[in-house]
Length: 362
Image 1: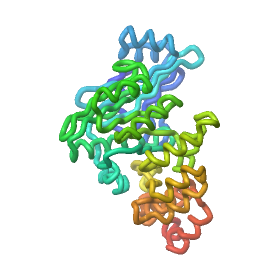
Image 2 (image 1 turned 90 degrees about the horizontal axis):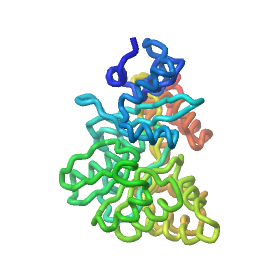
Image 3 (image 1 turned 180 degrees about the horizontal axis):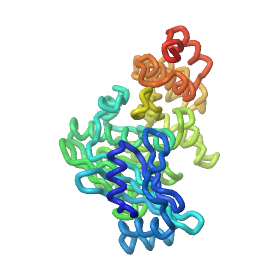
Image 4 (image 1 turned 120 degrees about the vertical axis):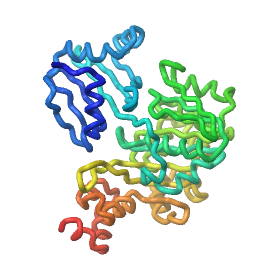
């Protein structure tokens, strides 16, 4: 018997899995602690998948899925959890992935996010970017930062998301959350009108295109704290990606604007824990010091890593230091950490000097 969507999602949460994959020709598949696991449910037919998905869509949203061939939305099972959903067509068939979004927003401390992010959350203006590959926890980190503002400052926070993931309740701050396709047509549309909404803090779910990037930088220039995400792996790549979006004749101006507005880049990656019971994040944090601002303006992003290495007093963290700390605390295997290292040779040497390789392999 084919289960309902809600039954599958309850099982997803019970297994402490992160994602549910629905595809015809396979049983429901769940990602448990980073690994895809085929469940014991029956194999789904093309009609099974379509019926499961149509059951949670309005006529308008189903028409949008048929027209655009993909659809992002959020879904909630009362008393259980929220879910970010992406539906799509493949080989003339429907498929979908559901991502668990817990009701409870974890704090910066609970998530092990670098403490300097508490200071970043309280900045009055500028641009903060959280970066990493898909599924690395960027939205969770941003939710924790927004939550810290909400608990500690009297601010008006406007979020523009696709879709809304974590639901914030007003504490010290007022939070308005807008969802693409429901409350606004695009990130750029929402950003063009956001100044009239008297915001202090603006969260842009993703800087996807030139217009969104330009509007986000302009908002940060005009005295707002702006936060957003990019699918980049470190600070240097993040700066280069933003600049490369613009035409060559605009790039010098964008570098100058970034050198003034950027406050920090927080890059992260998720790793399986040593006990295989979960995943943990490792971070690189770059804080925009005077020296780093000069490098950004002059296009010398290849020199950023040196300043991040030397910037501990400013709260900066290299990814390799974050990885070594996980190995030292025995939360992550040495081999797993090594596979994510930015400087593998140096990482191996430092781990050997600290006696961590033997501890990890023994």
